[in-house]
Image 1 (cartoon, rainbow, N blue to C red):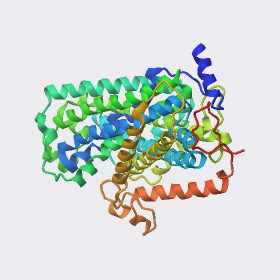
Image 2 (cartoon, rainbow, N blue to C red; image 1 turned 45 degrees about the horizontal axis):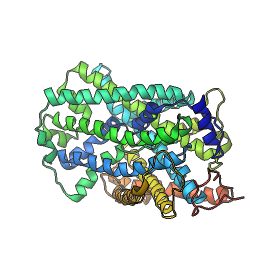
Image 3 (cartoon, rainbow, N blue to C red; image 1 turned 60 degrees about the vertical axis):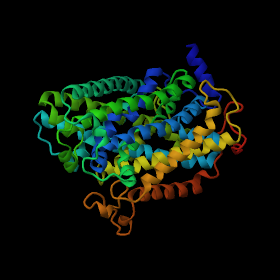
Image 4 (cartoon, one colour; image 1 turned 60 degrees about the horizontal axis):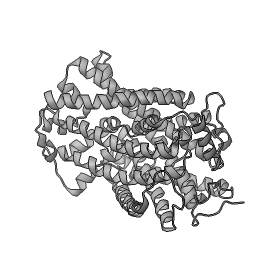
Length: 504
């Protein structure tokens, strides 16, 4: 009771009333961030891209991306220790750089989260359909079946989020344990009994062409996996002692995902019976599992991975809903009054749940496969992170932080922020570069996506999505949000001098 009162009092200093249920402990905070990252999800979705591009060497993108994202996570961990409120990047930039900067950051990040929900729902069929087929269902692994499974998944996670964060936490905690145990146990079984490649497979291209350009393409799988660690801070208002718990969870989720995912990736490469065939046919984990194990074992493992992906869907939607709620509570979104209303019995923002669910369903109207959705989601996430880090660097140059918090980078804060910006900016350019593999024009992938406008079909997908969201957001902000007062209440010293004062 004492801890709850302290946390509620701390939240009140930011001008917010405790409405969400504060029930998450340290492990639950870590679990929801780890579930958002979910190494098995991204690996199942895009393993084929790395393998077919540079062979076994693509595994080296994993530690590179993990180190780069850890730099970002360290800065975000310090921010979460200073600002334990729902909304992560939106809230941080609001206090560090002011209303307009924060609004566009939050707007971009909100739709990035929505697209990520859709992309992970679309990943689930990659594990579930092969599992069903092993059980005799005989389902075609085509876009139609993938779409329906994704839609059913989206409905389920929406309903579960409506019924409360405690339910989400129980499912998350269980799912994380299964994912970690499943991936590690499987990796050791493959390494001991089903290794077909030598230990040096990670130094071989398998006949592919290794250049700087092809390696940058192969990095996309790793870039798609390791983000979302700020989820632990997004759920700060539902976490006990968030100023200490959230930073630990943010950092631990990146390190944990790196270790577990790296072990799993190496096992996948060792387990490929014929590298040339795998590269030629674009094998993913499902094909590797089927090639090595009997029907029963393969089915069980695919179901474990499917459960991990489902939990990932759940965590991402929970995070996106809290961002939507956090923005709406500041009256920063259309229909904010409804979106910010918390059900007194369920302790959840029900309309935020429903709206996020509906918006996440839009990509399924014209379903182009998980890769296309993932391209847009990942690019916008990295843009949001970069904008957040630019605001953080600006604040540091102005003397932030001026108050103490349980987690602090101290003198390392400035160089880490500079490196995080260099990393994030470089990877954003990599993702936005127009190329068929990672940012295609619709006309380059006929039969998957059609904007029904010849000129627009000639533009890279990520460019189109980002420009449309910015144009819609810019019009709405200019007509509605520009004259609204900002909510910048915070404990003394937590708003840098460089940030604009609240509008009166």
